[in-house]
Length: 59
Image (spheres, rainbow, N blue to C red):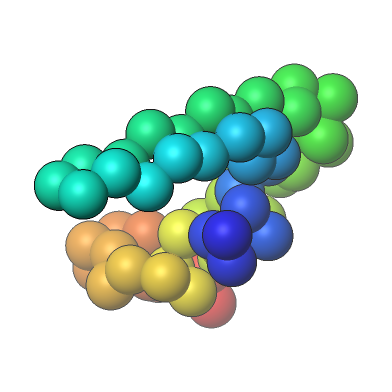
């Protein structure tokens, strides 16, 4: 559920089964439209090591 804080999603339901899981998410388009390219890159690189180009753009 912590990933929902980085992305514009709301986890509306989930089910954990014995060998898999289901997740239902809702994308919050209004929140995304306010994000700049830099903000998207910052959010992404907080979770993943991005390519050099995106890392340079964040700085």
